[in-house]
Length: 193
Image 1 (cartoon, helix red, strand yellow):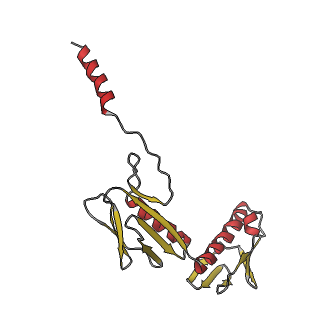
Image 2 (cartoon, helix red, strand yellow):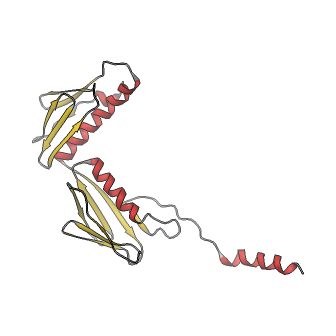
């Protein structure tokens, strides 16, 4: 059985959880999240602790879902109590971003600006023109929005320009050197007469 699945999930102050069959609702100071769990997974609430019960079936899929179910509920509890955030960096001369009325406008080397409207429940901030902060209570949505923003201008491998996650390492390739490759071809062509 999963070691993660056996761990209890403590409910912080101000967070409540309700289980109705395979439907879980978690409410807290930052909002409310709901999720349908895989049929057959059982969850119980005892005081200020949520526990996922070990599946009765010995099928492999239930062994994997045991830990996953516990992690999903723990993420819901963390989201409604503290929230999640992803930070992005913009690198490149003239590359920048700004937020107005939760609408993100990016200038990332195209002939036009790129506008992005986040889904409901996500807020975008630009503490500096070269950084973007994605915040929300749903971990999956925060990660998906950050991935979409990174995809607008992925970091290129020669100069590293583009949008990357904060702290992400981008391996820089060595560019072609025009002097060495051209002289050999010219010498070879000159030898034939």
